[in-house]
Image (cartoon, rainbow, N blue to C red; front, side, top):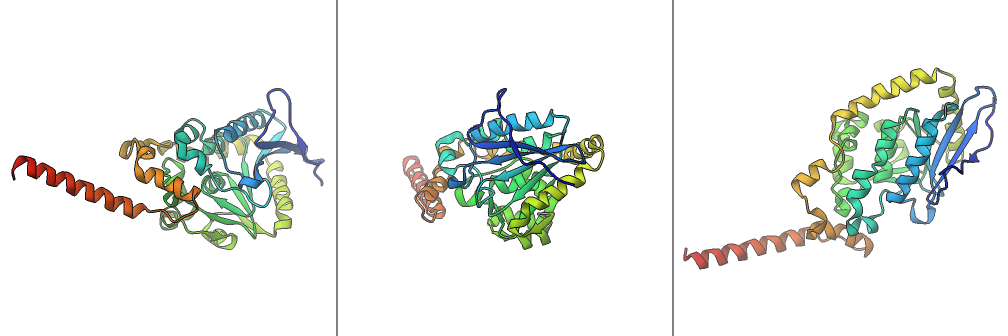
Length: 294
């Protein structure tokens, strides 16, 4: 049994700048796979609205191609990816990225099973995209983790509590709140990934999993995927909780500090900001007491 080479898909509105969209087909199993590769290796494959818009067009095409049995999500170069563009988010574009074009929604609403092929860094938005995929295959050099609180990015929505379904509540809170990094082997033990393989064997692992998916009823897979993904429908979409607690978060000092410290390559000063806020409140309280004569 063998696969054809990957062939780029272009034309008919499928011209891309930030991703590579490809398909290949199996000589005996007749069906094929599509692959969406974020192609910004010099910038750790970070995502913006433009990236996810292109991903949407590729997913739409793959889901409407009756010859495709699975979709692979990958990253170009040495890393799967490092999440959203923090510098870009700093300028207030985060809400457009996560609310209008949530990349995890592409995974959840896909009719075809989605495989994440992970190598190198898999952080932030790339990490939760990978664990929202139906299957996650990791190279031995893969490193997983979240960064939200480190860069004052208050992620919320279905993909945060969904991690509890993948690794359990304690591990999920640990990953999101403490921003620890996990090796591929640790991720396998946690249930974050399905299989760990040598880096030079990642492509072969994707082919093997693809063959197993093509060998069974594609219609049944669509129904099963929708059934599994249905559990996420009970969770709120991105931004609902954070907008209630901090509607102007990215205009607040703490909201600005994370992105600024990341860009300036320094340790964030979150607690000095809190101390300044406390001092301001004490000053306002003193002025009120002086004015009221109490």
